[in-house]
Length: 174
Image (cartoon, rainbow, N blue to C red; front, top):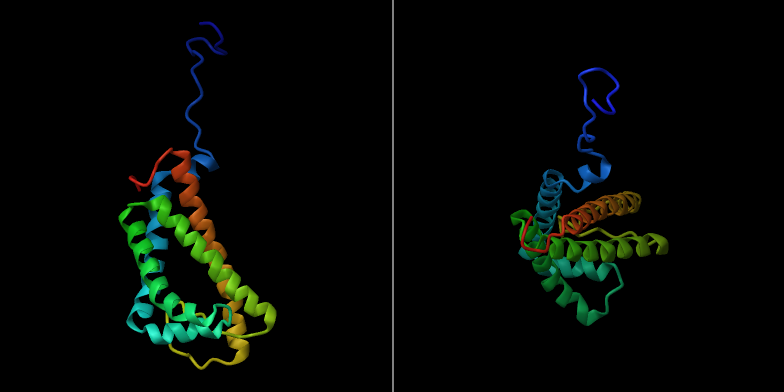
């Protein structure tokens, strides 16, 4: 046999390679990342929907949004989080939902980072919209962890966007 190194063995094409890129774009991983990110955003939206005035107060405490946008943001952001979270959970409009979630995470991270730089300790308002009564040091520690957590979720968003682009999927498939 031509090209074989031992009698009776033939050269065959290399087996499929399952490298990092293949693993990173695998539907198994993408589905689980979508579920985790979707659950996170649904869980974050529910307390805000239940108590918009408290969430508006949290937004106001960041001292970034102009007054008229505070109440509008408190009414719109939780519904946007819920819609994107449900879309990710159901695997519909996955790419669009992930991109919107990514945009929200960038805004949230920038808001927390700006207040860290200003030395202004604020409550996140992510899951519990009532003031927790934490000390200033505890709030600063929480804010630093929020930046790390949001960076991790941005990596999850990147995985979804990259995997769906690599597979050539639009928003119709998970």
